[in-house]
Length: 408
Image (cartoon, rainbow, N blue to C red):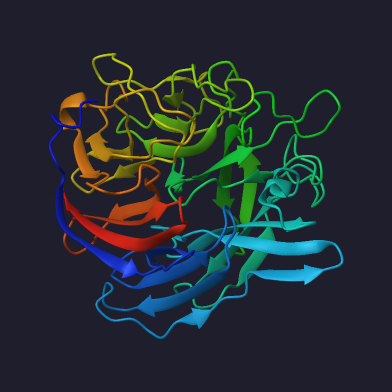
C-alpha cells in the first residue's frame, strides 16, 4: 500500500483521553452497557512492562460520555504462595435481546508473574450484570458443556499444560443466525508430550477458535466450542492469533486472523506478513482452512503481527480496522499506518478502493511507534465510529490513550 495515494479518513476529532507519562503506557476503553440508550462504562489502565497491567479503574456515564462518575479502583490481582493471580477484564457486550451485560475475563495464576506463563495457565471467566455493569449476578469459569471440569475446561485444554484466552479488546462478540453469541478466542496447542507447543519459534503460538454461548433460564451461559483454526508455522510463525468476527448479510461468518513472521524459525523475516481469514456457514461451529486475506481484486496486502477489528455499522456496511504496510513487516513492526476499509459482502474481502488512513507516524516520531491495540464501536447518537487507541512508543515505553471520532 502506498500511503501517499490513500486518502485520510474523516477523523472529526482526536484527543488525549487518558495521559500516560515517562515509562507509563496509558490505556482506555468505553462501551455501552445497555441494549439501548447511551449509558457507558469506561476502563482505564496503566502498564510499565509488556503484557502486564499495573492499575485498573472504572467510571460510569449516563449521557454518552459528556460527564462521568468518579474513578473506582477495581481489584484485578492477588498474590499467594502459588504466584500472582491475575484477571484481564474485557469490554462488556450488551445483549440486544435480554439487556444483560456479558463481560469476559481472562484469569490465571502466574508463578513468577511472567506473562509467558499464561500460555499454560490462562482460562476464561464470564460475568453477567443486570444493572449496566455496576454489580454482577453471575461470575463463573467458562466450562464447556459435556462433562468438562475446572481443570480441563475445554476440549483439548488442561490448565498447567496449555491455555485459552481473549487476545485483544478488538476480539468482540457477535451473534449468529440462531441467536447464540460467539466469543473469538485463541488456544495454545500441545505437542506430542502433552505440553505447550510452539513450533514457529515466535513469542507465542496459538490456534483460533470460537466459544459458542447460549443463555439458560437462570441467566447463566451454556458454553460450547467450535473446532480450531490452525495455520502452518511455515506460513505464520505464531499461528492464528486474535481472531475478529463479523456476521455477513447472508449469515455467513467471517473470521479475520492475526498472523506473524519472524521468530526463531524466520529470524530474517522472509515469510510474507499477512492477515488471514476463515469462513463458517454453520453458525461458527466449523471453519474453513485459513487463507491469506486479500483485497477484493485478489491482490494480497502486507500487514504486521497486530490486532485488527471487524465492525458492523448501522448503515449496513462492515468495516475493517488494522495496519497495512508498504513493505514486508518484521513480526510486530511497523504498526503504522492504521487504516480502515469496507468488507465486500459477497467475497468477504477488503475493498481496496475504500481504504482510508486513520492515523500514521508523523515527522520526527519514533520508528517504533505502535498504532494498535484499539477498540472501536459506533456512537449511538452521531453514527461516528468511536475508537480508543494508545499511541505507544516502546522505545522509552510511553503512550497516551487517545479518543478518535471518525465519520463514515
